[in-house]
Length: 485
Image (cartoon, rainbow, N blue to C red; front, side, top):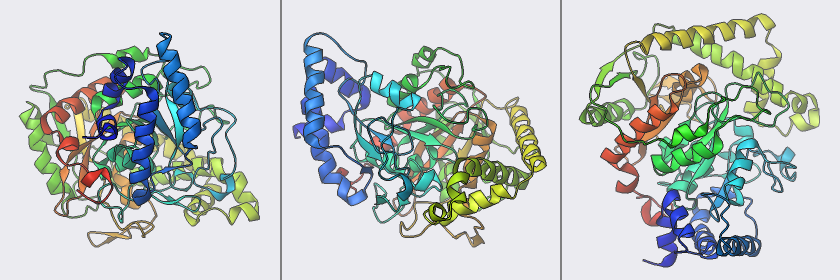
């Protein structure tokens, strides 16, 4: 095994220990990752806006000198990191996948980005996203399309698609992302890695112009293991006064042991909501087969349903999403020249928001509140809820989105991802865990959903499942080169 392969094969915590033990110099680590990215990235286009290698190696050399003097910036000291191209990153272009911002460098770091930098990470570039993060398929007119780690002609998911693919192909040791409509969970499921949408407020969002209404999106971690993901979450989490809705809880609690006994723990299986959701053949059967893994851990698994009309939840989602997207992109839409640079789905969202009344927004918020109460009722019977991560397997990357699922027409660009809106609207922690592969050899994921603010408990169940199944290590992308495996 070459030194490059040895280095990029390490998990994030393993790499941190190796750097701090001086087993590998930061310059060796940077050289290994840059060489690996050069070999793997052209097939999938996961990482974009990469900085010149010479500058990155010079920075790594500086970090080596600091370690030689006994100074470490933190657990990520000298580790390469590519930030999702939606998060502001000082000195880097944050294009958001839009031609309107393709040449504009950010003047500041997002809160979570600043914390990653303060922990010692070296930012090497960006991970690719859909335009403005809209849609769970990573393509845009600035950088192009990101291909799946297991089959580059298929979708990587999104909007953290570049991050998930880079992780799966060992081009990053750990990755940041964000999630409004499954954007941490869907690409994780599509690429056989872990993606965690933390509780609302766990990771402070901002700085931003609007601080109170934007409650559907959150930043969070991705990893090839739950321990790596938990460590990155601990770095991202914690109160910041610039984000008034952030949870004021010491993130050190996330560093508690992940191992625990799950004998007798009650899991509720939501499935397809009694046939409400269209599912591609193999999704439900694959997930139901994986329920046996949880039973093997000692859990009791039972089918259940929330006492709530699911079509009302979709109506609630559309209203709130229209409202928030219009608030974010409305000024661009108002300028005809800039409007022409917005993709049709972005224009549709804004137009939907412009047609809303205050009464509709209030009623949607009330419907969201009723949904939260319905899930609290389920949590009186169950400790966790389980749900598929996606309604389809990775699809043709040349398609904008799946137009039909199991013969059922999808009436919007995001209807095919309806399965993820429940945890988002309730503000609950949800971890996408790998649960196997379908008949065509494509990855399959499942959401573990926890009680309000029970982030650690969700990570603990994910860790137990990972230790039992080991899906990330059992089937890796062929040659880590994105050519199937």
